[in-house]
Structure formats: C-alpha cells, structure tokens
Length: 253
Image 1 (cartoon, rainbow, N blue to C red):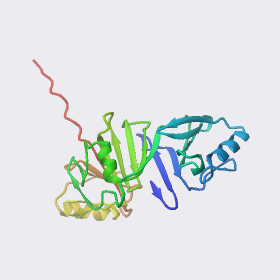
Image 2: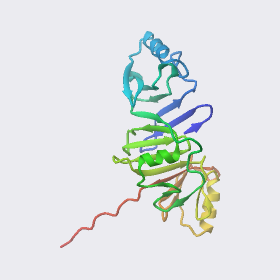
Image 3: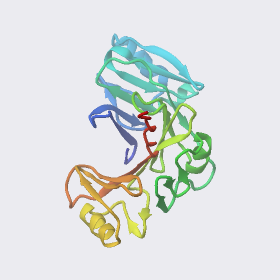
Image 4: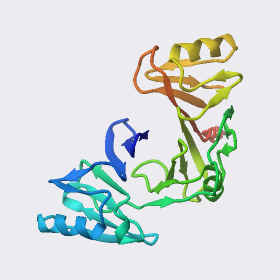
C-alpha cells in the first residue's frame, strides 16, 4: 500500500508476481478518457456505457459496485450515488466484481502504535487467532476483501496493518508496513537499512537468516522484508504467519 493524495494498493500472488492494482478515491484514474473517481457514479456509468463498454452491477454490503468484465476493471461503490466511486481495481485478466468493503473504525486514534514482536504469537495487541471484529475495533478503518489465493478473508487497514483470516474469521497472518514502529528484543525492525537491522540483531544474540529481500528470524517466527534485494535498502514490512503445526506422528508397527 502506498499513500500520497490517494491510496494505491499492489496485490501479488504466491509467486510474488503483481496481479492486481487498486487506487482509492480521489486518485486521478481514467479509462478511455472517462474520469472514474471523484464524480457522481451515474455520470461515470453513463459515459462508459455510451463508449460501448459492458457494465455489470452487483451489490455488496449495501454498496453498489460496477464491473467491466471484459477489461478486468472493478469500480467500488458507496451507498450514495452522489458520493462517487470509492476505488477502481484492475486485473490483467477478465473478471467480475470482487467482494470488498470499506469499513469504519472507532472514533479517535486507531492503529497498533509502537509495538513489539511476541514470538509466534503476534505484534503488540495484534495476535494470531484474534477475531476479525476485535481487530477492526483495535485498528480502525480500512478495506476488507476476499483474496484470490491464500486466506479466506483479508483486511487492509489504513494504519498500515494487513491481516489475513481463515474461514472462521480469525487471524492467520499479520503484516505490518514501515509506517508502524515495531521492535524485537530491543532491535527496531522497520524503516532502517537491512544491514543495520541484521547487525544489531546479531549483536543482540538473535539468529537471522538471509534470503532474497528478506531477513528471517526463525526462532521468533517472523520475517522482515525490503522492496528488493539490497543491504542498503530500508526494511519496509514485517510478516508473521501462524505457526505451522508439526506433522502427525506415523506409527511404524
């Protein structure tokens, strides 16, 4: 997720290949000269239809969304037509509307704040196994979606946290971006050159494994990522998945 005047989301598949791009209002997005965000929905839909595009309407959680299936484009709606579309999402293959929702959080400051890693359990108050509803109360507004791979559900919070859930809507994966302060055993992990994180962690007696664009902390069950491989690059995200249970014992007699 990148934030400037609007939010831009890049989604990757299990092979780390970009497969979808989403831009939130008021991003300057156009399709064949039609401005898609920041305008009344009926005007946008009317102009796209006049240009010969197939438009398919679907309703999700009280919001109307429109898909252009042949182009792989989805326009996310609101409850009020005059509000304009909330986002536009593009995939490189034809697609219908994906299930997603914008949700609000409690009044006042929300987010994980400064946090520490709890090995194999979570990051601060964000815990593996926590209920989706509780995490939304804690972390505030964001976008809920149905991933095309991996987890059953996903919430991308504007505070910089991305949570994946299983079918029971409990947390199975935590990702925190560099907009959040996270540490482990006194080592600040995000927003620093990768070599500095590795050096300080090693000096603190922590076991660290090097992988491409990734520092793995196997004893605590998390990884610290950079945008690409390079020791001078700053760390940008921390990922902590649910522990993998050991394989069941096999009787040999």
